Length: 471
Length: 124
Image (tube, rainbow over the protein chains, first blue to last red):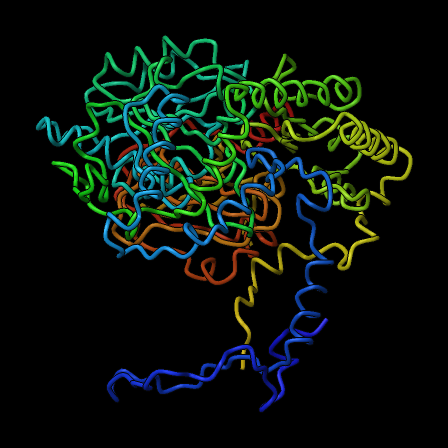
């Protein structure tokens, strides 16, 4: 298939813009760009066909099952989009005076209340534009808190070895040294290793609970107590909030600051469909450090010892509108999100565990991890091969080779919005692939066979990346 | 050609080769085959200190990024810049593809000889 640049023909264009009816004012000569912009020139009809053809070749949550572990690829109710498209929201300008956007400010304030109720926290900043950005914000709050107390010697953030890769990355961005805490044989935090690394240098601990192997840490109260005792703060990575929303409040289990992914748990589109939103919620003692401006009694004000701006203005407002709509439509049944997410994951795990090795064979939360290593050793069919084979069944592969503590990992998160029939189809596909691993291993190693492109050369793509079109 | 039998190994799958007062560090054939096709390497800079048992760099395969630990405490005197351009050298010639050359060595981790290392891998 040709790229849109290859379809461009000079002089061909479209008349979607009306004639300019205001005087044309050009920037100063030295501000004008010197190089051509290379915009493709193509008719509206051809452009429509181009993007429709691309869409047909892609797989999204609207096309089929998408059990991408840790990503919570749930259905995004269309009513969210409808509300976000209301002109009173969609056509706002961030520089409008506060008294002209009272509805929007009320929505932000209400959503803050909802998220405080869900997390048990005292305040929320909506500035972070994505999950990792929320982590970074949370760590800067922790840092500002310690420095404000005159304690600048806390230079270490503890991160379990099962953590999302964003945790150590955010800690590094915030100027901290990451100290890795081992997991025990149950896949949760090793208390002895935690104790061994806690001390006067500990600024805080970052934890996902349930963690990336889908397990709720039974020692969570002890873990947060130990960190506080050492003088550190506890950061909750809300990527897996879908498993506990409406049931466990992170503040109640000892966390001081948390980010949430509105684009995961609160059903706003992501995975290329973004934009994202990673609001950061905190206990009241961190409120003086909050970033950005907040609307208080019709005036925009900055927190007393604010860490500054994480983005311009308020963050991705229309994503907040979608999350707000989602919470209003669910109402008091918010706990059913977690219940059904956990039920669906356990259903699939139970139906597969007789043949596939489960990394930590116990009741899981919203996701579970297959460790294919024993099968790989016998057959040379890898987690990557199984992932590719699933494509031929119209299923988006699970997350693979993560978490790092499980060899040949396949991390499966069905989410609560899938029907039993869809799960049964997927289970059938997994079981058929298992038979093929032993009866026709090459067929799995050569998969996929029915997709627009066949097996891609990941290594070549990483070693010789072509990241932009060369004109 | 480097004879893998002549090298010392860590339980984290690095190899160490002494040459006078200096030591070369790389990763074992077993390590590269477990990691799969490597696409990037991060190395320290010359004059950086390395500490026995602590990470001095990392290797990235299409699957994951893994730390590479130093078997010795000392100072980096040279890095293998070829690897920065072509990480596949580690896959094709793991014992030729040294990562760093270390001098001023003050401490060495517990090391295995070739036979002990082979046995260690078998048991793992």
